[in-house]
Amino acid sequence: MNGRDKEAATRALMSGAQMVVAALVAEGVRSVWGYPGGAVLPIYDAIAEQTALMHLLVRHEQAAVHAADGFARATGEVGVALVTSGPGVTNAVTGIATAYFDSIPLVVISGNVPTSMIGEDAFQECDAVGITRPIVKHNFLVRNVDQLPLVLKKAFHLARTGRPGPVLVDIPKDVSLAQGRFFYPDSVEIRSYRPAAEGHEGQIRQAAKLLKAAKRPYLYIGGGAIAAGASAEVRELAALADAPVTTTLMALGCFPGTNKRFLGMPGMHGTYEANRAMQECDVLVAVGARFDDRVIGNVDAFVAKERAIVHIDIDPASIGKRVKPAVPIVGDAARVLRRLIACLQESGEQMESRTAWWAEIDAWRSLKCLDYAKEPGRIKPQFVIETLCELARDDTFICSDVGQHQMWTAQHYRFKHPRKWINSGGLGTMGVGLPYAMGVKHAFPDHDVVTVTGDGSIQMCIQELSTCKQYDLPVKIISLNNGYLGMVRQLQHVEYERRYSQSYMEALPDFAALARAYGHVGIAVSSEADVEPALREALALKDRTVFLDVSVDGSEKVWPMIRGGHSLEQMLLGEPADV
Image (cartoon, rainbow, N blue to C red; front, side, top):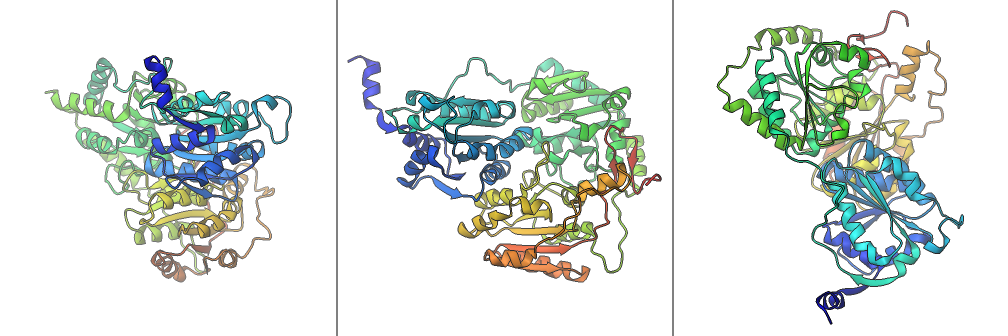
């Protein structure tokens, strides 16, 4: 018997399903979110045979992926979801796409019909690989049980390295049932996949030279900076360069919202000062950001402004995709920034004065673009968020659904730390808020976890109140209930001459009573005086899920706003003259 045969003989004999569980445990996975079905039952049977891996049963596969996604966003670890074939995997598609657009590390395992039946339109068969190809970093169809351990190792490696993202592993039922020798490698090499971590030294020095000479520098920070764990480096660079900072929706908390250099969020619902600085700066340093349409508005108007752009990103495909930089730097954001800081510190040249730049910024700030008018008898949604910010601890996780409530939270909650703001950015997925909160609470049971939602978004995954009850996940839900699909209605108000087609939510349930029906605490709030006491009560009930249904002013809009296709200089600070 040769050495290879001896090694093979010592490997444990397992079914494919048992290999899946063993691989997850080897990767340090502690919990899986999922929903069973025929094609994936062998894996569920293997889960039942052990105790190292916990499974949480959701009420819809979309919520399984969202919960795993929320877990990943809060921890930086790979989230794992398990679904069956056919409708199981198609229900998971929205969650996979949500993670893909925001570069979140996930491994989604789906069952499939036996290999002999693939392509024959078997019961609950679908082409999971084909369906998910555009919305995953990579996907695998495993046809041989002996390939399974290496495929799973590759899946985790791909999900967590380089630009993170979701990876799908599709496992036919006969592969799950087949027996094989299990060997899980410590590491894996993929010949065609070698993400660069260290930035080019010459490019970094060129960036340092530009930043040193800049009279109007600006740091534009995206979600990639949080993925790289570069918050400390961003703070240090801002102080060293005396530069203002804007963070995208996905990067809120990477730079403290209370810091004097923070100008707020840029883009469609960003602050006036953040957007004016984006247009008027002479050196723009973009870190882990995509220059997407919601941030820079009309791309032709944006590039028409003369400025030197330094673009730092670990994904070379993101650099120059929409805006051509003067200095492209491919690498890990934290490592590149550390080297950039060192280059600035070692240079003996004097930094250009930023006094005039800060005076200009302070003049823009004086407009106080986020101010709003209170009205007797109406609860302003901004007031609810500001009160929550005052009452919540700094280590509280704030999750959000998608809509006006998301933007008000982004504008008025002052995030001080990274990974405390959990929301869907690129895809803008309604319904994520409650599953996100479940994933976060499971990861951090001793922290307060609050999800801000609306009467439209919450109904998309409201059945997960049952999951909260089963697994003792006492999250706090704050619904800014305005009786509308608020953001849709606002767009109709501004761009469609107030034709409110299908944006009014009729026949809304009694959310507080519905929460109680699920075994939770339900509180209805209809006056401004009751907002603070209700929030205090909700936060004090540490061991209960609380649904706070707050009736807010349905006519309130999210200002500022930039209409689609317009430039950053065409901001609406309030009701447009033609509406």
